[in-house]
Image 1 (cartoon, rainbow, N blue to C red):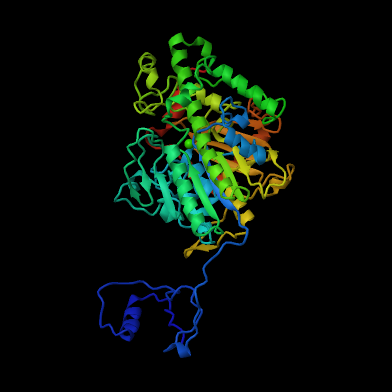
Image 2: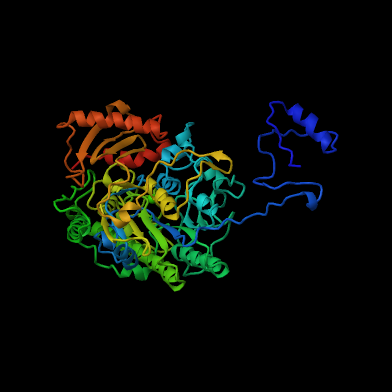
Length: 604
Ligand SMILES: [Ca+2]
């Protein structure tokens, strides 16, 4: 006899009336809705009265295919295109550079210009709007793209890999859950352990103190260790090493997915003083000179095409030469701290790589290293010393406490013009639709699977990473996950670029929207409109760039090619509609102030 299968009914009374007497229950005081598949999940045997007239169907543990690669996502926070050594920076990042040297360095990779949308897209392979993350979580404006919670219809790569025989570990910043869900009593539906991860060690919000982070381990908050030498970046790598090691000790054949997200180099810029001191004097010639140097080095390395122009300094940011001596002293120290913070991050990545090599796991680990957006401009022209985003200290006051910069008594964020140096050679910064906001590093290391290491110039978006992982692991994206019908994956894989530098880009169209600012990329062209809050979207001024010959968006062709602009504008509306990005909305509350503070200042 097969187990009775409940028939779908529209009437609860039918179920209560028919099924309960058979179970010997006279009456029950609760209601239960019924569905088609109320039987034991997946059982294909036969249940009789005894084993003699039954057929068993043993569970078959899911195992990954033999030779499946480990998958590692490393996410840097707020590091710009020009910040890493292999992208032309003077900052020492030898471990990241080594990954690029043995693997692939992409110069045409795109984030969503801000933390949570990039991360939601990275993990799900779908555009951020489509999965409810049009901006930071906690900004629900009543429409599906503003929920700040990735729906069950968009299972992420950890969930998929976990169901296919992988161990899954997340360490570091999460930022995919609204603040009201973060407390100990909060709804944990969108915490890492409910989103496919076996383990988690990190923080849930957008940023945290590096010395005293708001630590969460698995599903509960813990006090950070009170050690004078504690640092969050070191902790998450140490925890990753321990979790990976114990998994490998238990079952060395089982592949793993590690999602390692540094709080660095997002504010607060905090790092032990010896890392800052190493860079003493290195930035005394200021942000204009640093941008020039990085730009020249990028040309030498071939990271940017010959003939590229360095974008002019952004409106509202001062020339270094116009600053007072006191300001120069203070601002240079911020960049020394930032450089030290970044080198310290690279050192932690080196510790992870050493573990992988020691355990014989490096060659078959596919590592995808990105930054989630360009350099961070939120601290304005003078920077923040005591608190990111809300700091009233004057430059003179900062000068008096300069020795504390980067220590426990400071929570610094650098001056906005440094963010442009971070994003060199591009215009603007994090949050903007220009390349300074969206174009960030992507490095892929996989010694066993990358046939031809080197530079790659294909247009790639962050939604293309997870489809690549599905491709190289041979795992099909599920149509139904945990009983929920899945929305289509919108990215496309870049596996073909691993062996062929000339292989076509995975897709030729990609839209962008953040706080009403828009862009559309199509076939080498990019149209964009910067939106001023409080104005009509119809009044936004569109710009047009031919990226085939204008890597840094310096020549606006909107007036010369109105027909091309009109074509791309129409395409934007189509893509926005198809990717759940409508209605077009401004940011809620004060979030748009970062845009506005620049517009309020006169252009230079
Ligand atoms: Ca970020």
